Length: 297
Image (cartoon, rainbow, N blue to C red; front, side, top):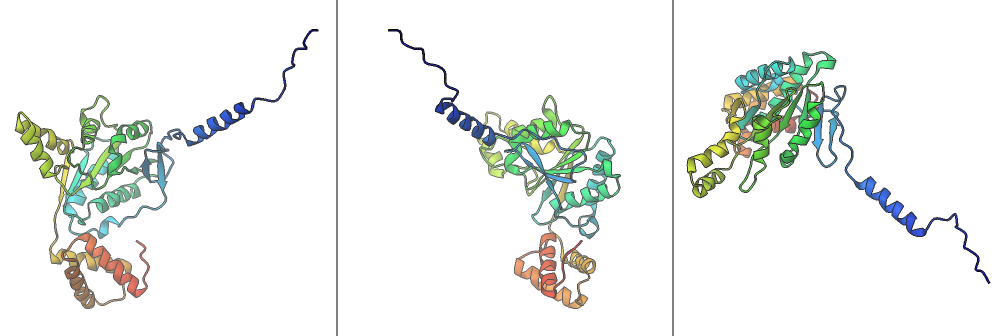
């Protein structure tokens, strides 16, 4: 008796369906395809290395350049450098260093807005923020920006490096020393509380463990040398502090007499233990809120 051959069924094996669902889920969870910054996009972006894309910023948190007091020389220098970059002329990377709250990052954002106000819509600079912890992904970001016809300012706020942190070497290579180097359509602006971006004990430890101590120090401080512009920001005196307060109050049309404003501003600085542009702005926000005045600059 011959046995009948079994016919093929049209139904797929159950395991096939399970594997298909797993493959689809892995594809969904995988890294998104990198996006190129569009020259027709927003004025400002934030770099997200986990997604490999630039997220547009609808409204940048900034103060107009004319309201930034006490940093006139720094503003003039950075504005001229940024204008040259926007015009396609050679421009330097810039390190804005100094005391906290003195207007370093505010100046970068204000200069970006001021230069863009002078330029046609199709020639505006893009501002891209990269976070300190994402510095190792800087080459990937620059690879995207390099292919764009648009010019960019790349901003890293509060940049510094601690002991055992070797990501500064990647930054050095990108700024000047690498084969590709910095793209011509990008300038790198960094703010920091440290002039050499390194903690003092980090530099001293390198000197103690190196065969040639001076060479170790040169290795550390050479990072800041990659910035063509060094702009120092220092603590301000009381007259400058009060001038900031008066400028903000006038711009916001605060209904308070100059005498009362002065007295309260001095009291505010005493409670904060010092004077700075940040302290002045925080005071103005407090007064504006008390008086029911919305801040729109």
